[in-house]
Image 1 (cartoon, helix red, strand yellow):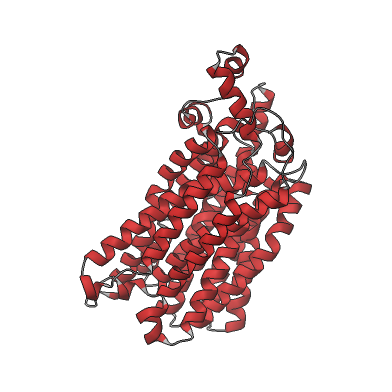
Image 2 (image 1 turned 120 degrees about the horizontal axis):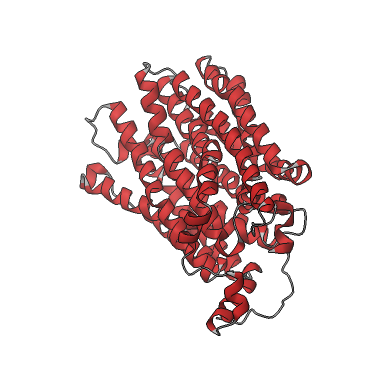
Amino acid sequence: MPDRTTPRSPQSPFRTAFAALSGTSIEWYDFYAFATAAAIVFDDVFFPADMPASLKTISAFATFAVGFLLRPLGGIVFGHIGDRVGRKKTLVITLLMMGIASFAIGLLPTYEQVGVLSPILLILLRLIQGLAIGGEWGGAVLIAVENAPKGKATFFGSFAQLGSSVGALLSTGMFSLMNLFGDAAFNNWGWRVPFLASSVLVVIGLVVRTKLEDSPVMDEIRAEQKKNEDGGAQGKKQGAVSKLPVAEVLRKDWKTVLVGVFALATATGGYYVVTSYLLSYGTDDQHLSESMLLNGLTLAAFLELLVTPFLALLGDRIGAHKVVVAGLAGVVLLSIPQFMVMDTGNVVLIYLSMLAMRFVMSALYGPMAAILADGFAPHVRYTGISLSYQVCNLVFAGFAPVTAVWLSSLAGGAYWPPATALMVVSVLGIWCTLRLRTYHRQRVAAGAAPAPAPEQVAVSA
């Protein structure tokens, strides 16, 4: 391991932000490709033809959900490596894992060819995806936030969040393109192309990330490790190194983790309700065109890509928490209208509702990285933010489409139960977002050694 105990020249924040963006874009592309395929094709490809349609839909979304089971474990494992060894190493490993699993999904045999082995293999590859993305997000946001200049942590941290928009844009765009070949071609081979094409994106991402310098925070952590190894009193006194970061986080910051989980619920689980479930509801219940809905989701993803950086800049100016609260309030107001317009079949209204919902949800994504980094000390930050984010994904995101389908089925296929649930979760998210800010202020007032506020992360880290 190279000696990083001496000062070095800081690398360009835009370079590290682009590295975070390139990797998360690829990994979210793979993830959303799975979500889209689960909504419109996996039920017919990987499950028996004589299975009831509703059960096949739930089973397809269940394969999507199982990937979330290993995300907290991925956050713990790669968070430990990231806090102890370095952010960069984890980002290369997770990218490789995600890319290989996605490519393999594109080669899987169908249920008609190999029977029950087909969904079993799909689930195994999905678990690998979940483990990889569990460690990806924390490293990507920190490599951007910890290299950001003073007062710009929210803005540069949003680049990692833009990976979600870029990934969704590429994924839905690719599926829209394949859908042009017709239903027969799409169900036969077209759905495989987006998964196979991810191999090209992975190569690009690896080239960018392998040339990246590690986060400057790791210089200080390695220096403290060296002091501890040499028996230095200063390093032991400061306690800036943790042998088991997850234990320290759960012991000292469990409230931050818990509140963070609920603060992120709409940004994670709510996203799948207004994308994957919306697509399933529109095609299965309202019999709307798949191409029309995919095109709408593609436009919405493009809007998200454009507005997220500006909303993050707004967060640097007025406060990241205020932007998130405003976004959550917007979700509450739009939850019912988002589904109500699907009943009309009016393309313009459907597209406008998709764009409006994605705009307010963009306010949740941009400031997310800086807000979570605000809550944890640098030497356990990777583990802390990964644990909050991935537990949230397990509890809320992984089962969001399945739960939405189930709630809707209880009401005879009506949209209002999932929409109401989204409203309730968003109201809870407002309260928890405000509590995160309160916890930070209480730690500062108590004289603890809190993580710096978002606008100070790059300096004090």
